[in-house]
Length: 281
Image 1 (cartoon, rainbow, N blue to C red):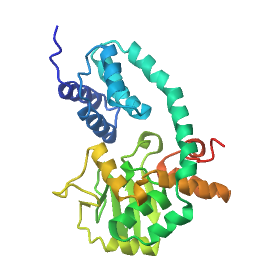
Image 2: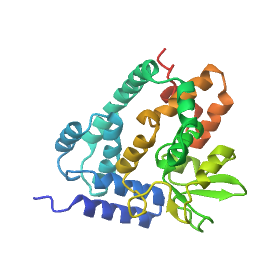
Image 3: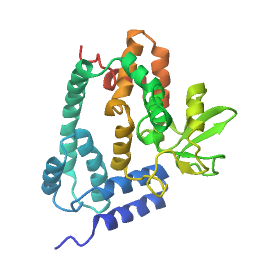
Image 4: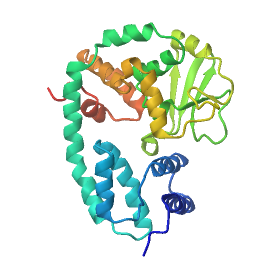
């Protein structure tokens, strides 16, 4: 029997079911949509075909795992077998850990020093300064930086917001990787240079700090990540966080590392394994 359902139909039906259950957040639903839009093969095809396609399309085990998570959920909802997909996902865990350690080891030898990054940041202006400050100093993930400038927070907070209030910048982050575990994050930035750079952006109410040409929100995760990488110092992106953490570890500044963990919605143990350049030494 031919597979008549498109992925869009399958995911729409699955999301409707989840909404009816009232067990998932708006942020999670947006993630389902964004991931689903990038799956180029039918989710209900054979498990072997899915595994083969994922291996052909992606080399990063984290990316493969991201797609597998949604595919497994949708197949379960449609009463399709998932045993091979689950076994494949489980097999990725050791590969992810090994790749992470190998990458950290290589990074430690190739990345610029903390002082170099700090100098480059201090010589930036405008949106490039804002983006790199939020990654390097505050420790935000890419998704957290998809910020909408608002004068007043809406009654239903379902995005990430940035405000200028009482001469400080306030971040209200609801849509991020671990939002279910940590809830809404509130971050106050009192740095005078950052505040002035932000003011100079001259954003109007409900404008995104990074947007499409028509000033609307960038919902596609890959597109947003690509824009951030291009804006980041030496296109280092989230590697900037690792450089900062290495410096803090050298100084035994665990209090500041904990602050970065709270800003990211990440536990201290994760920072000391996944973001510690000395983890392999």
